[in-house]
Amino acid sequence: MKGKLKIILPVILLLAAAGGGAYFFILAPKPAKAAPPKVVGTLFPLSPEFVVNLSGEHYGKVSIALLLTAGAPAASTDGTAATLPEDAAVRAIVTNDLTGLPSSDLIDRPKRNAIEQKILTDLQKKTDVKVSQVLFTDVVVQ
Image (cartoon, rainbow, N blue to C red):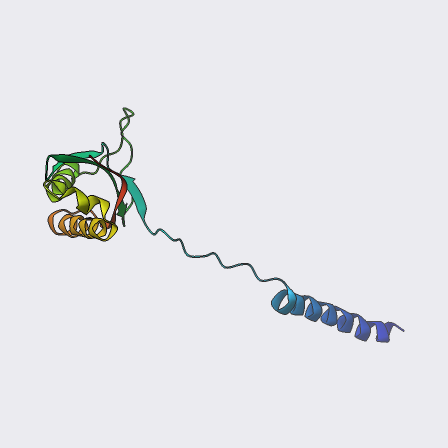
């Protein structure tokens, strides 16, 4: 009897281990793969908004956010909003690209997208800010 037990016990343990392994590798539910993020980077709103003179005695007020490929700057310790190290240069580029435009360019979606692309190109050429997209978050024309 002891001889049979020495043979049967390891066989039972081997079968149990094989069954557990089969469940773990074959039958167990697979973890769901996370969908890639739709926005890659850090959105950084420029503050305050831009108020610019447009052609034909109109003006525009535009809120802009930048999609940064590198992390956003940290907020200051005195409670004021975070700014980019090259904030003045960024604001000058945006202001120059918007000033004097026909008001219809900010209202018409394809033209507005072209303006965003122009600002992006100028920021990439003239600053060290690692930006991958310019977004107009609010546009008011009067």
